[in-house]
Length: 484
Image (cartoon, rainbow, N blue to C red):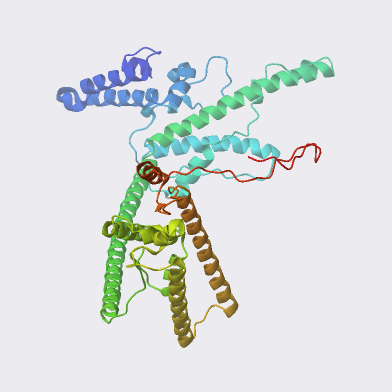
């Protein structure tokens, strides 16, 4: 037998890439189709190249081959080893069989005999210890069923552990021991050699099983069958996925149509509601309206709440002031100079004029508040009557009284604020003056002083008697004749 490294023309420490390149080069060189003149020789050598590459390309097979290379090449055990077991090294080569059929030298016949011999070796050992003999699975033939024969065979022999004792590997004879201690030491040393030999034998058998399984056509056929089933399962899964996508799209379109119908229905309903609102407006149902803020309200209650708001009260007060200012400007433009009768009124008359205006909007604040309260009360009464007609009165009489009281308090507060504003305005108005001689009243002291300068109506001011200031000393220092 020729070494695999020599067949591929590589060194023993060559890596996988180098072995692969060399194999391709030699395969092209020794392929039978490339050498039609010498077909028989090239066919045999090409088979050796393929076998060498199969062994060296597998890490486990190459490791086993490197460890037992010499024994495999010699086709037997090393010198000095007792030949008590079947030599398995010669079967680690494709040259031990011819073809993959059931002939005498075929793949199935050769390896069936090998495993039968291994089983018989273990049977001999089992007879010594146990009457029950376990039947080891048979290798079978080319037509054996994978599940019934092939799978069981490789499942058992792939994890095979021999039952043989390997007593022929003992290095020392226990009969030569002088005492018990030496006998125990000899037994321990011999046990080590037996365990080593047993481990090597199990390793050889398992490696042979892996070698045969890799080249077994039944395993290859079953692997191809599994691949076909896997492809069919993938195709079926892909078809199911496409069907699911189509169903999802169909449901999506149906949901989309339903959503479109729902939206159209909502639009139709909203249009009908808008038409109903327009019809109700055309029928003449006037909505509550605030003239001051220029706002309309859907309900009377909303308008009442708005009238009690700070914003409405503020705008109402500003409108009143603006109307008063306009009245005063109109009145001043008509009467540029005040008449003597008007001047005699003094500060009180002027204040009354400012409040009353020019007569166009001649209303007091009390009258305006009374009108507003009457309007709010009428609106509230109308609302209560409507609710009573409908049977939906939600407020008790006491609550209504409290609401009216709150509104009256708010209006009273607004009146106080307006009175304070009028007082502040009066503080900053010019002080009036009166001439003692002609008794003429002037709007300001500047006009009075100008009149006194022109007419000479100035008079001497005589101080009246006044009470003297009180002192800390009491009545001791008081004089009745102290005057200004």
